[in-house]
Length: 168
Image (cartoon, rainbow, N blue to C red; front, side):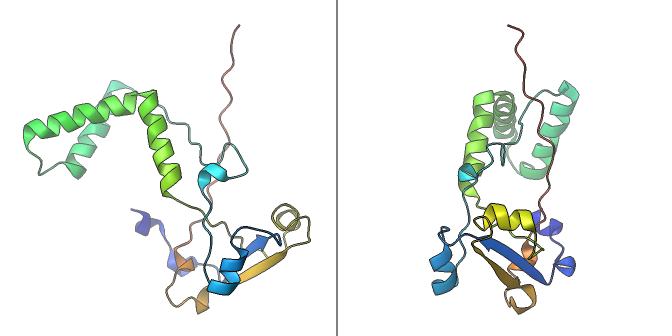
């Protein structure tokens, strides 16, 4: 599914990475030609990579989702095993603890390498390049023979949900 979201035709010609002089991964970047992917759990915004996971849905929507899972992933599975797996999926979707485990697994599985299409954005220089004392690395996507940067996805920012309020 991820590959269908990637649009290599509209990949920017250049990407930029703002850095402070002491940033993690600077030595690897320049000495070994390696980039450092940040762990989402260590990002500076506590709400970043913290989706609101909820199972507040109608029984019809839950049934439709479970049927989708069955069609997509369990079509060749014996009937009794398929029923057990679907019951387990419904339980896991409904359980706050299971949803937290899913979030923790996702956070520990993936890393991020955030880039910009702009080399001269004042707020990026201030925040990510140590108040304009750092540097900005340019990545040329056309020189990228393995098309690594062509697989970059744009950030989809969404408004944070309102915090729950207590009536105490």
